[in-house]
Every structure is written in C-alpha cells, then in structure tokens.
Length: 279
Image 1 (tube, rainbow, N blue to C red):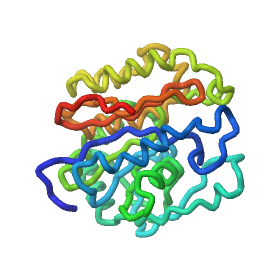
Image 2: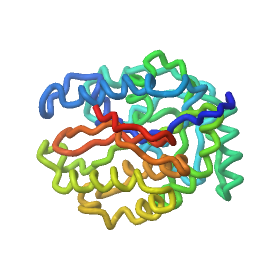
Image 3: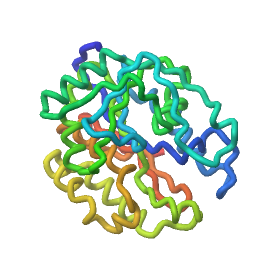
Image 4: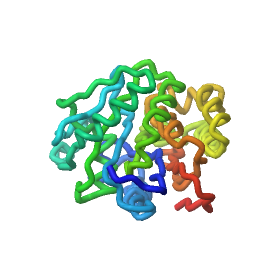
C-alpha cells in the first residue's frame, strides 16, 4: 500500500435493495433508486486520490473472528432472491488483495481479535452492487471483512479502530449497509415511522467528538424509534466499523434521500471541516 500524509476518508454508504440499480424497478416509482445510484457513481471523484485498494464491511457477511477475504479473484455471491434472471448474471471481476488481507489480519490480531483469512469467500451484493457504480471498471482490488454474529456495536467499533492505520496506507475503508432497514414496512412502500427522527439522530451523533460518538453509537437502541427502524441491526453496524476507523475525524452527512418511505444516508468521515455536500 502507498504511504500518504493525507489519510483516505471513511464512508458509510447505502447499497440499495438487492440489485435495484440494474433492473426496471416496479415497487414504487421507476426512479426510486436513481439519486442513490448517481451519488454512488460520483463518490470516487470526491476522494483525495485514487486508492490502492478498498476494504469493505458489508451487512451481508456475519462470521466470527472476524474473517477476511484473501482470495486473488473472488467470485460473486448472488445473495438476493426473487429478482429478474439477468440480475443473477451481473459481473464484477474486481481482484482481491491477499497482501492487504494479511495486513488487516495482523492489525486485528494486534488488537486482540482472532481473525481468519478466507480464500474461498466471494463478494456479496453489499459489495458488488454499489461498487459496480463506484468503480465500474472493477479496477480497484477489494477485501471484505465480516461482521461478528453477536452484533455488538462496541465490538464493531473496535474492529474499525484496529483497521484505521490502513487509511494512511491509501486504503479506502467503507461500511456498506442502509441507515433505515425495516424491510416489512419498506416493501409496502409506505412511510417508515420514525425513520426521519432516527436518521437525524445518526447525523448528529456522527459529527460528535470521537469518544462521545462511540458511546452514543454503542447505545444506539436508545435513539428515537431505533428498533422499529432496525428490527435487526446488521445494516447499521457497518457504520460502527466506519466510525471506529475514523478515529478523531468527524462524520458529515454527504447524501440524504427517501426511498420506499425510509430515509437513507451516506456519511463521510474525514478531518477537514467541510460544508455539507448533500446531494
């Protein structure tokens, strides 16, 4: 990895619903996911430089350790169901990065974890769907780190803190999830009660000083309507990893939209004071 005096930012991104960006959408307006897709397409242009690699924590892989993809050419895992046949033929031939996987393992071991390199695991749709927009040429190597099945927010924050040095090695760290994820309500395409209040809380908390932010995110269930917006928190926990990797850097909301009646946020953590660039 390339050393740099300016660390890469850290992102928490929304990855949409299944292969939503690559099909004719029939639930709700046809343009439901267009603004999110446009924002993801423009994300790479906001970086200080082209990263040597990307490390992603997706909501769709839970395995203790954590586990780290270490194959040179990971396959794709089409872990969505009931979508048109062509969406199971989507390709995204991004390379893996075995050296980065080994570096991540060493950092996690140094923080007291027992990580495992997984040469067989492929990329789930929380990676290849958004990154097909972010880096459509699939020319940036990617490593995926699993979430812990216990879903402890503080543990995931510690994972992020352990991986933070990678930012100075020109690695882009991304948490891939969705800031509102009550699928029952969203698939009815009705307004998700409490989504606006919960996401306002997320925006405010993300901008707090690091220790206050960690404490607030660790107690996320006390936020307004938290368990209604996230009946299960797997799509929220990538934010905890991102916040941990951010260190002292504050979070800025750089994307906000309402999809299927629920608020969706994109949050960027970096040191410079930035005007909100919400699109």
